[in-house]
Length: 186
Image (cartoon, rainbow, N blue to C red; front, side, top):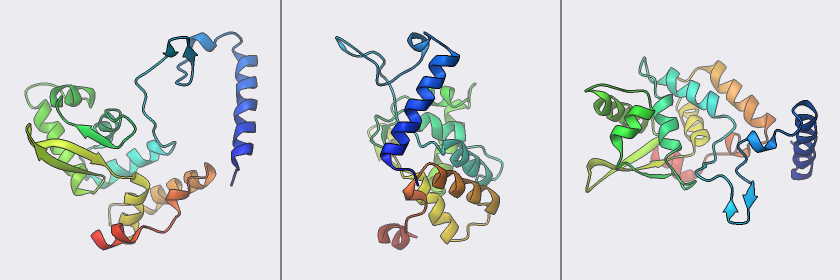
């Protein structure tokens, strides 16, 4: 596993190679750490796991012909890095997830319920009705939990690919033992 120092060295090498291949283009890149005198140059970011493409693939495989990944990514991009979302803009979220027409919000709500059924999220009621708030659980832990339960729709190939990617990027939460609370909730 790579240490922080090794990761920093890798990042510096990548930046040097990027500058060599595309010199003087840093102004055209989305850099969430870029600052101006007034503060950060770009705002409106969220942090996502580097394994997100495989997480989304696994969700879609587990959802039995009802793709969930676009709904999940829209939900994830609606947080402020705190895993909490107020669902006050359901029509906008449905549109961003790729749903249109008269049934857009209904289809989005169905996908949200399926994400909840698979334990990737939880939903709570509030002043907007039964779907007012959502929390996004750590997807690595949820996928591990499904693995421990031998959920039939979790394919071995996708799970192994996720573990390999997680090990490659030193994501320890994918290989750590599940917390007792998660095991008990099962």
